Length: 310
Image (cartoon, rainbow, N blue to C red; front, side, top):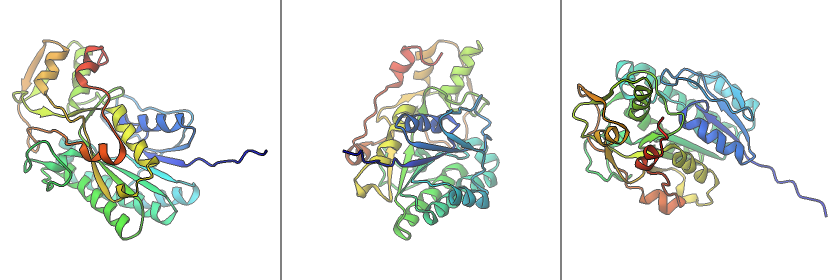
């Protein structure tokens, strides 16, 4: 009997050389898919970029509509995992025009190209910063948005475009609001690197960990492997009710920044508070658990205890 050849989806990961994107790429490659990476290698927080030799790399700025369109016309893409972004709050406050160009125009460029070229699913990476200060934790997807800075505002516009492309054009989109993601390959460069990456660099250099304000602000720290798993589950799911929806990706547990510092060592110093940041973040993750069967698997206290930060 002849074997029936079953074609596997082809996947595009934007920002696929960065922190979260590279983990998604590795997962897709491990599944035996044809994987393409679109990245302009511009992130200043990355000490290095990650290239999987089994994925095809394309150096393209997503805000260049013509190049994005040409790429989709030249390559068969079934799944899009959109992680490329200006993803730091403070730099977006300093240069909002750049954040809008990348996060709004870039996302719209990708959605339009996906719509016109037969993409079957579009997974969009958004942010828990959408909840701002107007909501009491735990934060659920039906709460109103409260954008405190150009970063969160630009990412929420991307959510709106994903919903519009689903309802108006029939493109199957899924949006994820990530909470504070940490793990292997996390950015460590610059004063605005994510706090776990910043602490990692400072400990490696024998420097005191810098704690913003009193350090009692709490964050839902979510493992990067769990974030990658949420993306994969959405791509593979046969639950059509997920399309056009927004899902929290958070552990459902939070720690203060001071808690994290104490887990790592005893050498830290305090620096002035920053504007435009919420005091407490904590995910209600029941929606993604019910819709996709997703569960967090790694707690940051265990990750630090096992020495993963060093």
